[in-house]
Structure formats: C-alpha cells, structure tokens
Image (cartoon, rainbow, N blue to C red; front, side):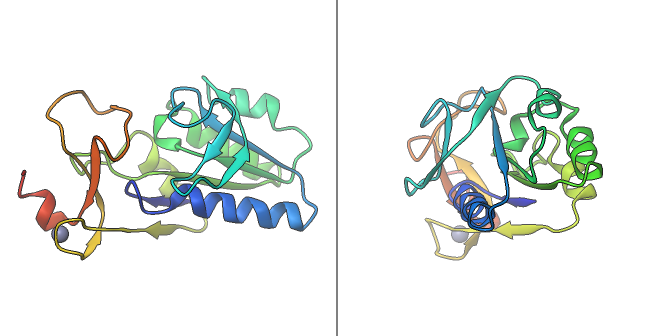
Length: 173
Ligand code: ZN
C-alpha cells in the first residue's frame, strides 16, 4: 500500500515501483477506476507528468479476469473502487502476485476514504507519504478542499484542493 493525501507523491511512487518491475523483466498489469479521468483515459499520470499505461475499469472484480499470467498488479486511486477491492487484492496475493495499491487514505474532511481502511488492514507493507502544508510548511496529511460544494467525491486538482496539516485544515479558511 502507498497511501497519503493529495499531492503527496503516491502515483509518482507507484510509477517508480512499476518501472522497477519492468526492469526486473516481470510482467505487470495496472488498473485504475474509470471515474478517474483527470489526466488521461488509459494511463496513470502523476502530478509531475510521469506516466505509465493502465486499464480503466468500473468493477474491481474485473481485475481478477484481466490480471492473468502477470507477476505484479498495480492499482491506483483505490479509494474510488467498490467494496470488493480488498477481497480482490487478497485473491491476487493468494495467486502469488505482488499487489501494489495506491490511494487516498482520507477524504477532504479527514475521514477514512472508501475501502482504504480495509486495504491497509490486510497489507503486508504500508508507505504513508505526506505533502507539505501550503499554509505553514509542516507535513500535510489532509487534502483540504478550497470550495464549499460537492460530496465526498469531487474530482479536481489544485483548483479545488490544497495540502494542509491537521492544524491548518481546522482553520477552515
Ligand atoms: Zn499547516
């Protein structure tokens, strides 16, 4: 698991690990939820424009069908997947595959996001990344939403979100 707030470098870290998989001549398949089309339909792209080919899917169980004969499965934006995603990852791991999952651990209110808590509970290794608070410069763990609209899922970038530490996120301004 690679978790953390927005702008913490999760996708960048996922891409770095998957490139090393390729160097090792292992076969990898990468999936992302089809809801996440902020940058590219069929690639995962980090904020610094690093990119790698991926397959957008609607249903997490589709991964079980598509990830055949691969050594490594990469999954990005795991917080947007349905309730079966943790079971899917467990099944892949039981098939002997290495499963590398990246996602937002908390939503913009600081609450656990989607199935991320269940994924983190069954993960063998967890890397938690941090952004830098734009207000005070400390370590940021909250994806602070600058606009007062929308539900838990509001796709956006620096136009809508900024990284803040827990103290500055509570300032509400
Ligand atoms: Zn701060």
